[in-house]
Amino acid sequence: MKQLHPGAKWVFRFRTYISLIFLLIFLGSVIIPLMFASKVADNLFFKIGFSLVALIIVAFFIGELYSRLAYKNWKYEITSRELKLERGIIWKKYSAIPFERVQNIDIHRGILARIIGFSTLNIQTAGYHHPGSSGAVSEGYIPAVSVEEAEKIRDFLIKKIGKKQGL
Image 1 (tube, rainbow, N blue to C red):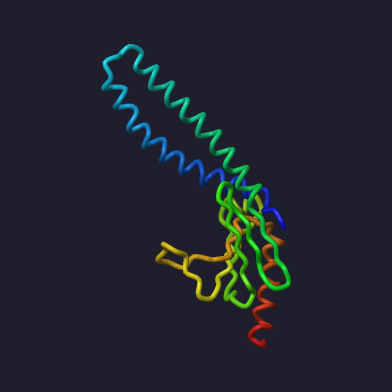
Image 2: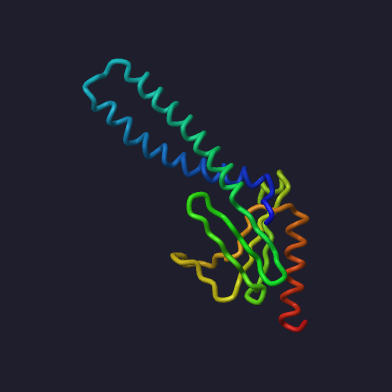
């Protein structure tokens, strides 16, 4: 199975850090009022500052650990009949998408992707509806492959789709 582009670590980092920022804001809104409500007011600002710095350091390490593990455990493979995806750190998810179900292949390159040099592939399939989602979600999602690899995958899948439709 193939590994993602190394730039995927940055995608995973940013997603994790954004989630952790919201968590820190929530925790800060709970912890700081509790500190003010405590009867011990000595060195209150030191305690608040120390708590925030400790939370930021912990968040940084969690984000770094998660991004490395997510990158290491995200793999894909294109066989002669299907696209296989394997991902997950604690709970593994294995997907196999037969080429017969592929309807469209989108390549997306955001700002970060263009800077680092990778693409995101969205492979839309017939009849797939993500549980709990109201909109269209791609069953085949590869978050970071090299620009050349993305073009190769798209061209390969388009040829497979064309043969299926008799074009």
